[in-house]
Image (cartoon, rainbow, N blue to C red; front, side, top):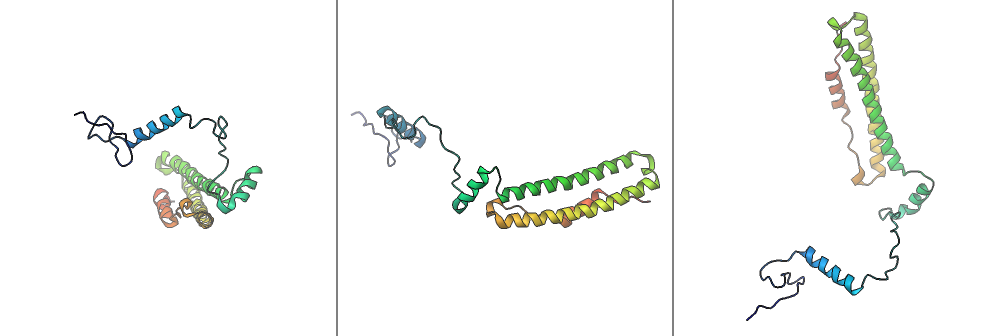
Amino acid sequence: MPEETQTPSPKNPQQPGLPGQRRKWRDYIEEQIAEAQQRGDFDNLPGAGKPLRLDRNVFEGDKALAYSLLKNNQLTPPEIERAKEIDAALARADALLATLRRRRDTLRLKVGRGFASHRRAYNLLRDNTELRYGEALRAINSNILSLNIITPPALHRRMLDVDARLRAFDDDFPRLPV
């Protein structure tokens, strides 16, 4: 007696004609879509042939009007502006370290670490940079805190460990003996 073939269904996802083999759901769904296309179920849908409108943000919620006004006036939301400010401040803090690193490396190239006047100048620059770097890190933490207050938890940023960064600064840029 020939074996009966079954059409796949959510309760019986076996491939017709191949008993015992499970049929992938994806294949089943693609087959259903192909059959619907052949029947013409997708013909004459509203908006057919027109581009999708992707300018609506489904996550706006109660801020939809505000975001719309900002977008129409080529402005960005405050949380994005704050994040850009944080990134720029971090880049400026890194630039402080890069300047000091170049100065330190120049002195290392000189025999005997250069003249005493050069070492004094480096130490002054180092101390000034350490103060400015610490202030910059604290200001960045303040901006991160205010960003975290106005954004949802998924967009929160981690606070900087100022003490650890200053310890790393001391390790990387020790004072030179005068």
